[in-house]
Image (cartoon, rainbow, N blue to C red; front, side, top):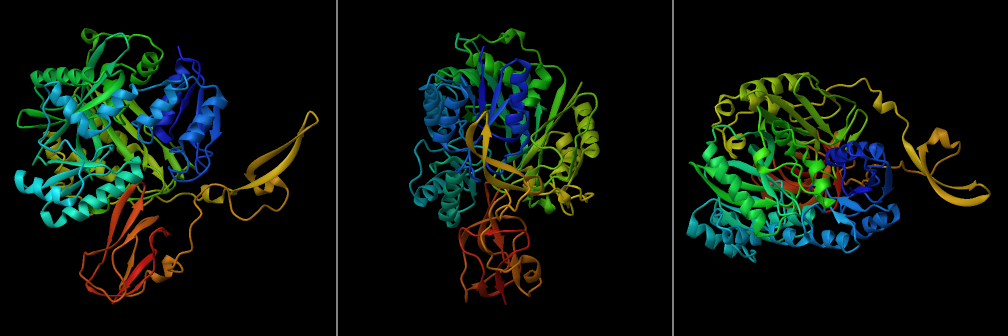
Length: 590
């Protein structure tokens, strides 16, 4: 068995891995950015090391710093979680080159399957067909136009090294091709460090059904079960369930066998997910995620298999603890992703901020996998997943009813969340009848009036004294050390340097304060905290109502900020790179 595991991640997935290691008696090492210094995963781990920085690029994507911490801590294995370096071939090779176990597939498998273009080729070679699309990276918008003219519009541009819907753009016509490609490449580069994209046909009403597989180094590869992840917005999942509803067992068996073929074709080991699109009784290979999925708990709930524990055993060279014939699926499970977003009538606006109260629901068949507790803060720099609520029932109606009860019981204050939208989804007749698709939330679900203003708090969290950083000289057993101390100012007993520890240092706002200027006639304000990545208008330009005036990046997603009315731009108050807060003015239109 492994002797010490470093988790190269944060939030909910880092907590999940730490708990699995604790149950197996394996010491854990956490890493953290400046913002995450007091995060839950840091508090739970046996050891924790600072990465420095605020943004992912400055912290969790800093390969050299992580490699140094591996050596310093003596960790003999690294779990990458999902996102960040989980599907990065160079990172996996850098880990294994040091004789440290990478708790994931071999770098060669990531290379084949982590790139969605080469994975399509590998799947085809294994006899598993995908949705019609290209097997080469896009080099210009002209290729998008040519593909759309041949196969019909709309088409989908996708990040070759991405996941979670980031770096994906649906292109309805040739006129939008250039902007869509540029936006997809920009978002992919920020989220995954690579901007290569490819294109494929966009199915009209598909369901997203994926198959969990796991393989060991002894030649065993099994499919554990499928998950339906069709309730999505912005191509990112909101609700997942297992088994897939209205899904013939013959198709389930065929899909499982196809997933194993794909895995074996690339010499895959450890846990992975083969994703398919399912429409009119047929399924098409979509991609393979060479990592643990966010939605893995629904599979665990219906099978009783701890997938993270199996990952650890496989990484230690042990065989799987079960065979294909021993996999049993019982009942039904539903997983709800609780995100820090305001549904806002279907806009789903990121809503970072401090969680003043978080009390998850309890009860039979109810599980909460969270990355935060009361008093913790959701940052604009990272994914906005607060945690996952998973409910099991003897059948689908029971699981849905239990999930609705748990959602209504959930107490969370200080931030807006997707809970009101989750309830609307589970209560809708289309979802109950399994007539939804990946396009259903955005095209048919009526979320008019559905919003989530942050619940009022008692203000206790706001009264906490902020921490400051001091460099001090101390003596231990007569030896002098220079140390960094981070604590409330009152505990340091002397004046502290300006600036509290943790939190982003915001650039001066050109608006001079959002609250006052938001009332200016024709002012365009931002609905959330974030960073301006592109300004699309200039002073003197005429704009139409609904026209994008700038692009705001928040929680690793790009959002168009649009004009509320037609007119002429009289002033632009932001530039690319500026950090803005909720209500700040970006431009004035008269």
